[in-house]
Image: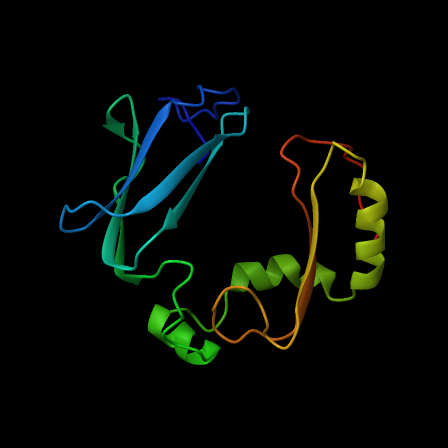
Amino acid sequence: MAMFDIDALSITRSLGDKAFDVTVTQANGNRARVWVQLLDSQDGSYIVRYRLYESYSDIIINVQYKEQNVAKSPYKLSGMVYHEKCNCPVNRIDKWFEVMGCPETYHQIDEDLSIFDNVDLEKVAAEAVSRFSNRGMHSLSHYRIINNKRDHNLPIVADAPGSSNLQLWPGGREPCEV
């Protein structure tokens, strides 16, 4: 969540780690078994994480600041929302896209990523390790999905590599050589 004041100016400081109240309930008003965590990025932005312990049909996520709804809160997620250990009911990605109502393409994402058509992922991985492996400063995650084997049941995904620098505080800002 990015915060803005009443003049629509970006807030760039922390409002406190308990500034917001985030609740997840069933649409019928019943309690949902859920874990919620609010992370303060110390720059006026916040990350809300939640974990469902059961699957629910229709849930409501309510975000409040000083007992007032934030932005377009409450947010209603319609249809089944599955907990992370649930076996995905649709195991073909094309069917999953259809069920979720996904468009054929996301033109903005395609345009934004088009400059990376010739990226050498092995070189990026090696550079990521050399740049972000300073002990105590960064958390580096290098992951691959191979033959669609993973810990969670998701729709079928093609083989895909990736690297992420999971740091929360800005480090060096030199551009990557890819």
